[in-house]
Image 1 (cartoon, helix red, strand yellow):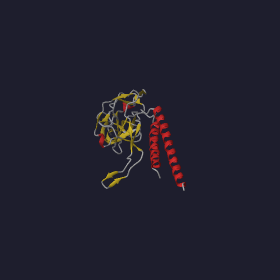
Image 2: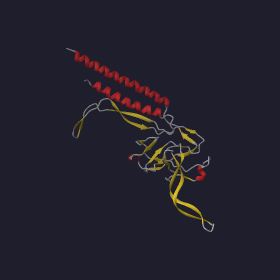
Image 3: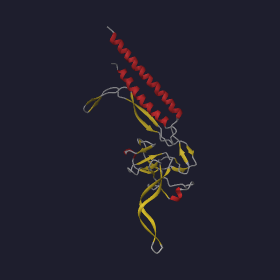
Image 4: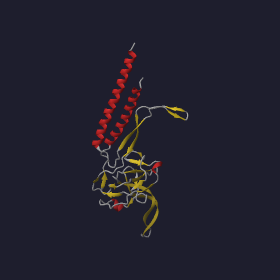
Length: 262
């Protein structure tokens, strides 16, 4: 069968992958802090390449090499909610999972307060036989409040630790600005995307440090996915997919004509 059949097949598969990327961007266009993905393509080898153990198989057409994350900042929107934070500039919020110890990073600053019980010293007041009140301390279960993402992960402060909030502050509606940390990497390329708009670094990202961005209370950063651009890219991918299918059909018709010759 002629090479155009395989070229078109490869193209159709890659356009489908491209369509998945843009569809995911559209699905998250209203999610705060979402970072859009931008697919990039590279040309496959058009001839055999000599390898250590013989010739390497050649490819045809092109393939989607990567779906790079767009880290450009988008607009901030005011919420008047004291537990909402946005980053003005570069960087991420740090989230600590207490169950696994994993630290992930996000631009979504829609935080909340979470109640957490842990062992600590508590005061116990007792009335003695003489009627006198006595207070002593003992180990027991202490209830503390921490800033979290609402899904069981704690927000890290500027000191890299959990942000504890006393009970009196937790009951207030006008919570003062908290020391929310902003962290960043020298190289952000290739960070792995997780669920809930979170990312984790890979080896090439290097060590984490304090970012240059500033945490702004009462604001959230909207998604940086451009709906108009994403819809245009979806239509473009659909048309390219149709062209590839038409090319497959045409290649098949050519083969059918050749096979029918006598």
